[in-house]
Length: 159
Length: 158
Image (cartoon, rainbow over all chains, first blue to last red; front, side):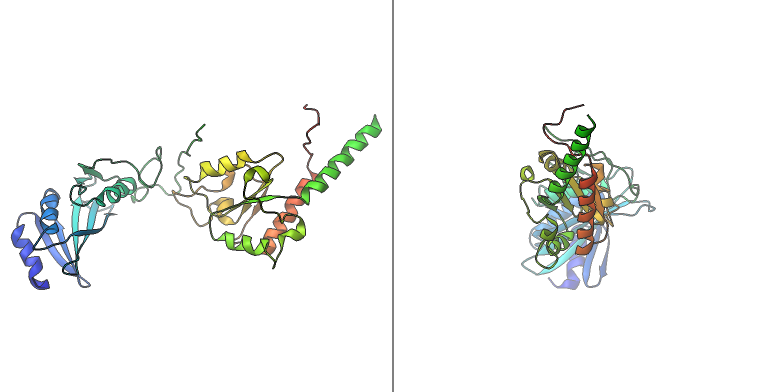
């Protein structure tokens, strides 16, 4: 499958799930609807697309925008040496998206990090709790609405 | 009785003199200020000239805690534990802007100055402070130790 046909093929396979596609600086980007994330990802993981590696998974906060959060997934195909970026927009009041732990094990900690920093909830995650900050930390620090110089409760000493 | 009073003051002075030139320090180093600490501690600037040359890597053997570098919220309980493990009398130096006030890390992860966790005797600002400033801070601490009321073991509790 050539690079030009790839997006076409994926769009043909998932006509309803994919919203749009783009190319920035040689990287191909697909914008996927929230409901379609899991089927698209599991389709891309196997042949013929073969994006077997989830390189990274993160989130962006567009505070003023209608869809406040944007999940960003970076996929890599080892057999074709090719990368693909998947984006999903989430509304601010229901920042919820399907978990990908069932497809990629490394999504576990990555999703916990996004939950910790942005407060995005992942449906079907086996152990969704903070990973970088401590229990008792208030708020999600990488949200644009997080107050500057907010005082946090300190960790208490154990006996 | 007046002769006895005179004697006690002299004794405080003598103990202060002995203590200020025998500081065993525990380096609690987390960040780049550690480079300046190394420079201050080793041959070029030689902190041993001022009687604080003996580095102990156990807080139980130390009486000067050097907090060198950024302290995050998750590290704070460890720092508090180290401080509480030290024997009396003990002193603390906040070394560098991060330990003094959080420095450039005005964010959710860093403690905004270690004096929110433990009492501090001398603050050394700078990002990082030059070894001369460290030695200057040490001299300030020695002055403080010399002039403070000494807490000695057989003194009556009032």
